Length: 439
Image (cartoon, rainbow, N blue to C red; front, side, top):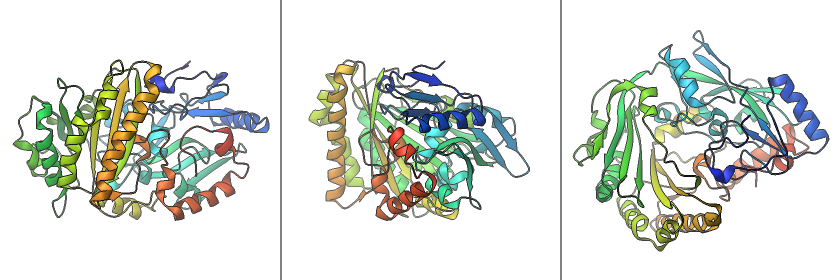
């Protein structure tokens, strides 16, 4: 029984009872019992999010989907149906036997459910869109205990709403995903000293500024500004077995402290990514267009802002920044697959995240507020120079960020229409109070 199987202790709670339905039929019965008696509950897939109540609850029922761990690969129509309780590492390992993969998470220990319903960013996203864009069918248990299949031909409005709609409409039991013949790649991790951060940010701007970015190239940059022994890292991958592709040329002249890039499988490449062993985590997200001047301001803020000392004052206080380059091809690919509520602008952009870690709960408020203040500094600079993008990536957002409100007024209006149709009793707005709710 997974009592507190969450990556971050910020998400550890005390549910009255944990239930692990064996199958969809049992889950339907559980939902009917809870809704009839107006019992509060939470839903857990992988438990990766540090958000305190996203997948846990105090004094309520926790529905643990870990038994929904089956996967079926259909070579005839190039799809894989994946249980909502699976983690991406298990999905990839099973698909490796067929030399195919799916547009899925970049960290193997992340659960399928939360990432997909939060939209999901993948190393394949510049080619095919976000993870949610590549769902062919959602099987969902609704608030009245009935089952709905949402796809491009049935319950189309619910299909649209679930692409970033989080836990607001039902409990998804399985996702049918498109598969793609990608297996051998070139990639790995390049590590750098922290003093190379300005050069790396300049290279990032150059990488993002080419007229037509190579969609097979993808990366994420992280810098641990409180830990010079770790420094900065580039998780980079080229989705073909071609060594040192030209797409990453802006980075090749910057001296590394370590380099694991090589030709390997995509799963092997992702398995090399580590997560620091720190008890408690919080994340804040914002977005902006690529800007050489903003990137250099970020380098200054994340290494010298007074909030950095507040974070370091906590036991094991750690902060890392993350830059995730998003190509306009990602947006176009998502629109071609039916669109989503996210309201993404068809422009090159950067999804930025600040990750803060610490050890003990007495520092929760200090670290949360300091991280938010640092995010606000960066966001203010982006607004001042006109590069701010009003989008918050749900999978990197902190619990008090208005994620769905940033989808835009029209998307929120449509989402509420879908909610009234499929959850008229507002079960997933009121009884499931955790996670990102419709405003």
